[in-house]
Image 1 (cartoon, helix red, strand yellow):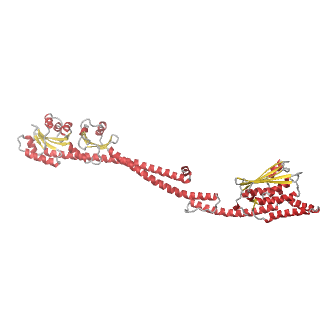
Image 2 (cartoon, one colour):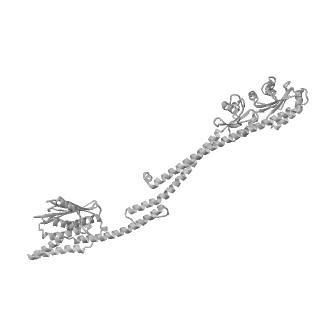
Length: 577
């Protein structure tokens, strides 16, 4: 069944549509998948770069606010008086000002005012001990402050490790004589940087780092274990970035985005989120597979409907053609479309109507021809037989053999009456044998030693055959086989059924034929009385049967002739009797 479907036009058309549709769907889904994956990755890279710049801008903004606050405190007279005079009573005012600044920064950074003389000072929390040691040792942020008149920014891994301080800002304060009297220091703990960065982590959960020009990881969103010296794996790439004039961009095969501070030696590194990309790609893949299934099913339905709409008219046309092949020329194709297939169906209907009309005309002509052939065959009784019969009657009359004359006349009249009066196209084998018997009885008056033997299968005498199919064979056996034979002559007539056919054999032991005469007779050309009868029998046998029907003639000179006639067995309902 499967092979038959594949070999059918509908099957081939359906498979072609299915393969074509699935091919288009697969190509479409692949293009969408890779297109969306590329677009999303590009979007993520651009969005990450934008987020990186925004983080850096936020940190720059926060540092600038700190610088402004430090400058304001460093220039305040109360602060200067406190730093200059260890016995000053301005400590309360300074403390109040420090807390005012501390509050304005949402308590995100501690502020210290430290005297250079004794390392004592005022703080919003506690002055770290490391600051006192660094002050005396001229180390870290204090060394930077001593070298500059501006606010300096410092990231000390030591302070970060001990106090979780990420960035320290400081400015040296000088008296009116230019002597350094103290420092204003603000430290930004790790939590302050984390609060700024966390606003950009909520959606994409990626890695964000703040590094300084010495490639120290000041802050890493992954945790404190990833912060400090030697924790940066992109050193070579970062050195190139520090040396360039570019403020932002991509590095390390576009896995990271960077954005440099506009005024400080800091840079934000942000990793393009693999998790989000992988999750999105996985979602796209699952969506693509789902879409592929849906579109494939729709394509199969579409292919089936289109294939059926094209193949159904052709299948109906093929079915109608098989009906025509089986002889039903009245079949018609239902035409529903006006396209080429519809026009083919209308042409087929016109053709079958014309064929049916022609076949009816041919049948009428064949019917007329058969009647004429039967009548012609009836009139082809050998004139020599009529002459001999009349001559036989004449001599018997002269010899006074009135009884023989009467018998010959009776048989001759019976024979003529059977031939002329019976207008049926088909007769029984028994009727044909009666005709032969009457004909043989007449011939026995002339050939007294003529003997006819019958070998008939039981029940075959009731079978129908076309009229005058056997009598001409017996006539030819007597006239041409026994005419010149001296002594007795024998004719054998046999009949039997075989696989839907009736087989008749007429054998005589007459003079036979030479090879040349046999070849001429086997041609069955309508030349002369002898061959007209055989030719008509041959044509009618095939007309009422098929190509296997007809005559088979064998003869040996001096021994006799055998003629075999094969006819299609005719059912009684089909016989025109």
